[in-house]
Length: 79
Picture 1 (cartoon, helix red, strand yellow):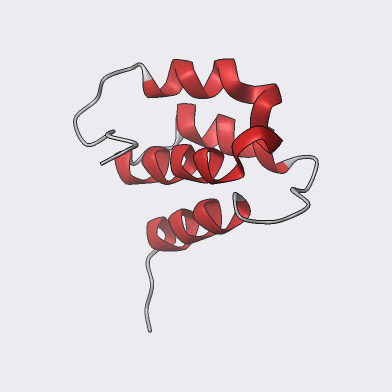
Picture 2 (tube, helix red, strand yellow):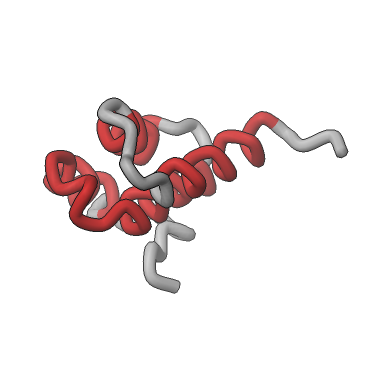
């Protein structure tokens, strides 16, 4: 299908959060993506992946909260 790089990153971020057990580097990588991805949709997908991981992502909660608090348009995690 011709998926873009952004679409692939977003799908991977959302899927990572649903893995059980969560791989050890998944939460830190999602937190990094939530803070640094070039696309708003990528940062949002990473945050949603962390939300899906729930307590398994507890170690990066502060980073996720910091990324979500930036208040950028389109960053509604719960919407």
